[in-house]
Amino acid sequence: MKRLSYFILIFVLAILVIPALAGAQGKEAPNLKVMADTVWVLITATLVFFMNAGFATVESGLCRAKNAVNILSKNVIVFCVTSLAFWAVGFSLMFADGNPFLGLDGFFLLGLDNSPAVGEAYKGIYSSLNWTSVPLYAKFFFQLVFAGTAATIVSGAVAERIKYFSFFAFSFLMGALIYPIQGHWIWGGGWLSQLGFKDFAGSTVVHSIGGWAALVGASLLGPRLGKYGSDGKITPIPGHNLGMATIGAFILWIGWFGFNGGSTMAADPQPISLIILNTNMAAAAGGVAATFASYLALGKPDLSMLLNGILAGLVGITAGADGATVPGSIVIGLVAGVLVVFSVIFFDRIKVDDPVGAISVHLVNGVWGTFAVGLFHREVGLFYGGGPKQLLIQIAGILAVAIFSSLANLIVWKIIRKAMGLRVSEEEEMEGLDIGEHGMEAYPDFSLKL
Image 1 (tube, rainbow, N blue to C red):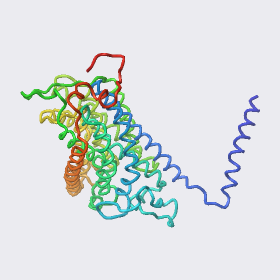
Image 2: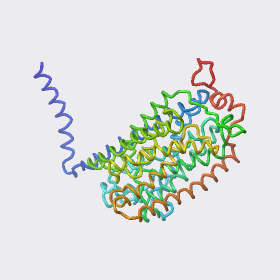
Image 3: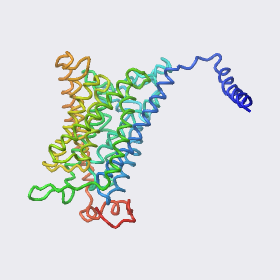
Image 4: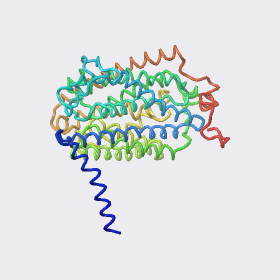
C-alpha cells in the first residue's frame, strides 16, 4: 500500500510538471524573483485589507451599542466606495505621469503595465512605480488598500452623529481627489519626492492625510449630545464593548506587518525582516508608554489608552520603518504612546469630540512619525550624523500637507453639508443611528440602550 501511494504521487506530479516543462520550451523561463515579489505584495496587501476588520471592531467597540450597526456599515461601505473611486480616478492622479502636483493620464487603469518584468516595449505611463517589478494590477491593489485605510480613519472621528450618505459622499471624494493628489507629491514622483521628503509606508500619506480629514470633519460636526456641559465639564461616553475593541487592535497590529513590510514591494529577506521587527517594537513600546502615561494623567491604566498607544506606535514608525534601527524604533514608539494620551486629553479640553481617538492616533502621530525620520533615520537622521537637512525637508512636507489637507477637506465637507447636510437630527442621535439610518439594531435581544 505504501509503494502504491508513492507511485500515485509520482504519477500525479508527472502529469502536472511534464506539460508545463514542454510548454515552456522555446519561451523565456519565468522570472522567479518577480513571481516571489508578486506573491509577497499580494499577501501583504491582503493583510492590509484585513485591517478593515480591525478598524470596524475598534470603532464599534469604543462607541455605544445603539450606533454599532452604523459604524460597522460605514467601515464596510468606505472600502467599497474607495475601490471604485481609486480605480476610476485616484490611482491615476497619484501615480500616472503628469506634473509635480498630479498625474494626468491612465484613468480607469487604462495605462500600460510599466513593470520592468514585461519589457521596454510596455513601458507604460506610471513611471513613479518603475522601481518595483511586480505587475500593474498588483501595484494597483497594494495602493488601493492604502487608499482605503486613509478614508477609513475618518469614520471613527465622526462616529455617532454623521449622516450615512454624507459619509458615503466624502469617502468617494477622499479616494478620488484628496488622498491621491497629496499622495502624488510624495509617492507619485511629485514635488515633495523631488525635494527629498521621506515617508516609507505612509505616516503622512495615509495617516496624516486621513487625520486632517478627521479633524476638520469632527470640528464641523460638533460634539455628540451630552459630551460637554455648558460649565465646561467633560462627560465620558464609554464604549460598549472593549473586548471587541481589543480584538480590533490585535487585527490592526497584525495587519501593520503587511502595511509596512509590504511597502518594499519586493520579497527581500533582510529589509522586510528589519521593517517588521521595527514595526512590532514600536507598537510594543507605544503600548507600554501609553499605559504609564494614562496612569499618571488619569490615575488608572486605561485600556482604551493602551490600545491607542499600540496604534500610535504603529503610526509613528510607519514613515521610517525601513530606515530606523531597532532601538530607534523603540524610542519612536515610546514618544508616540505618551503623545496619544495627552493628545486625547487636549482635544477633549478644546471640545473636539473624537469618540475613538482617531485624530490623536493618526494625525498627531503621523506628524510625529514623519518628523522622527529626520531624527532617527540611520543614514540621514540628525541623531546619526546626518545634520538638519532631512529634518527641515520633513517639516516642509508636514506643513505642506497640513495646509492643503485643511483647506481641501474644509471645502469638501462644506459642500457636502450644503448639499446633503452632515449631522443627523437630535432625535435620531438620541435614539441611535442604527434605527434612524439603518432600521435595525446590532443587539436586538437586549433592551438596554447605552
